[in-house]
Image 1 (cartoon, one colour):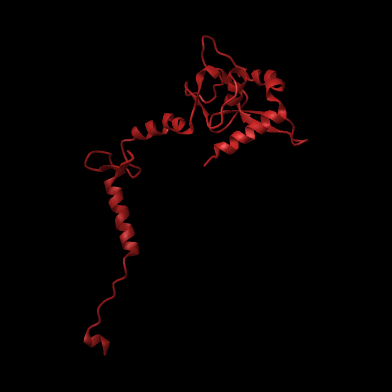
Image 2 (tube, rainbow, N blue to C red; image 1 turned 30 degrees about the horizontal axis):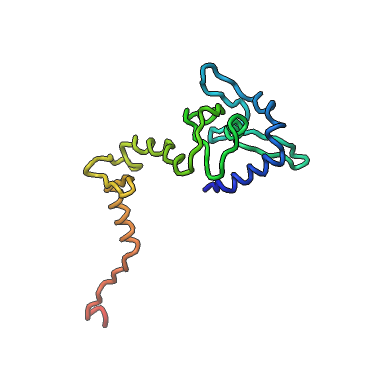
Length: 177
């Protein structure tokens, strides 16, 4: 789990250390492909596996190298500081976009709720084992999650067989002698 407080504090230290406001602006904006009519401004620099842009500054030789998310830096360069405890939400849903007017500051909880994970799971029609999510085979949890009844019963049966005490055959009088 990512500790966003630590990331925020590390970013603040980087910003102060490198004076990002003054020194990196021209180099940063040279890595942006601007769109007409308010479209997405695409980051053409380093793109992480997660799809977010990353901007690096400093030098490895003197150990001043630091990296920040491109969208975060774009927001701060154009719109100002991001208060502690808030995150950037891409309203356009394009992680490579650095247009600060496509971003909104939200709490981590709100950012999670707006994410695509919920929509992705709702679209599933079958459990991982291939059983249908229908009225007869689906239990809805209090949290809203779905549980496949057939898979749950199979799991409970495996657990029971693994944990029940082993039954020993009863010895008869003839066997005991």
